[in-house]
Image (cartoon, rainbow, N blue to C red; front, side):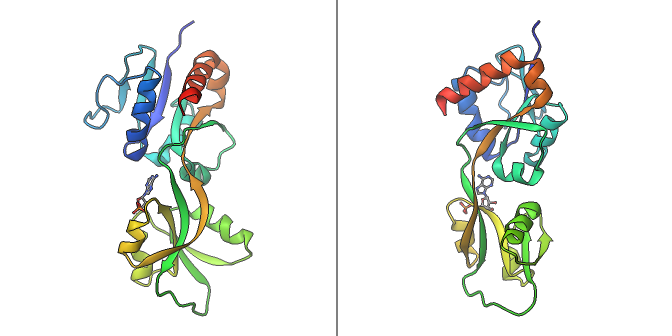
Length: 208
Ligand code: AMP
């Protein structure tokens, strides 16, 4: 029986780094995902489709079976924290670090530390493991502004070159986690579409 395979992926760095990998294993979208407005894209392989979703939604689509497999950053997976997904392969792409940062001129102050981040779960875990109580302020972007405007003492954010931190008068003080994109698989799909998924994993494994 032939059944189709749906791969969930997000636009941006991950898509840019994934398309060449997919091409190497013989999967080419029928349209350029960056230009197309379609959210489901066919590929040169009639039984493989791509769906384009927000980065934070990739594990959700895969967990609930909307997609069989997906490609998601470790930062997103740490926050999603699901036992319902397999994570069989580190693709080694979209690499960066999840870091703690503060103003270059940061001065400690009395009272509970305030930390602004999009990564609330990972940040809480990081400070809890050190026995430090913090107030976490959830932001959805431009975290680097928070210490500059006095909203928070520190931030937890992704850092690649460090240029964004530097441009905003911040410095990194600790690495919380090395980040890269992972292949994730729906547990039921792994049973039902085992051959197809195993084949995808092993061909990707050979090139990463
Ligand atoms: P940089 O200035 O090169 O350190 O990049 C930092 C900015 O890019 C921050 O706003 C990050 O949130 C974002 N960023 C860095 N690496 C990644 C990545 N691998 N995936 C998504 N966003 C990233």
